[in-house]
Image (cartoon, rainbow, N blue to C red):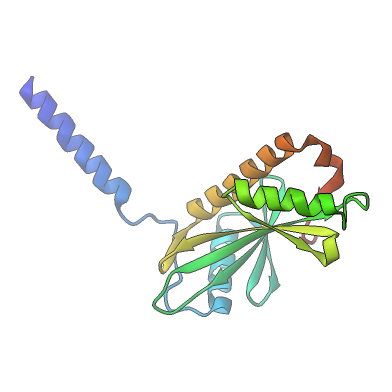
Length: 176
């Protein structure tokens, strides 16, 4: 019985060590500029068959789970790096530029922690922005989970404010 228990412990330790080792989907961005990091992310995403294209020298458009995200690496030497992940929504004219909009945005920013909501285009659009932080390298799994977390958070917002459903329409970022 003791031998079986010891074998289980050794197996668990070996499995745990393997799980914490370097994953093959890690993307090394150390020492890169924002533009170089963007190119590296583009290549990694394309290699995994993501729908992705360059929006600018330092920005990518990615389709994930029926949504479109903008990814923008922000590389800082000897510091915490991040990929800013953004979605955009156009507002119905009845909601745009109203005091109610500012109240809803303020409430969202106080109550939710998955993203920051920013009013854009003089109150006619909303930017939903979050950052996936890392040191030197990030994985595709982490990026995917961050986009999924953002979509889950936005689904909760739609449940909390069902009246806003027809009032805000996601912007599809280009023809992917």
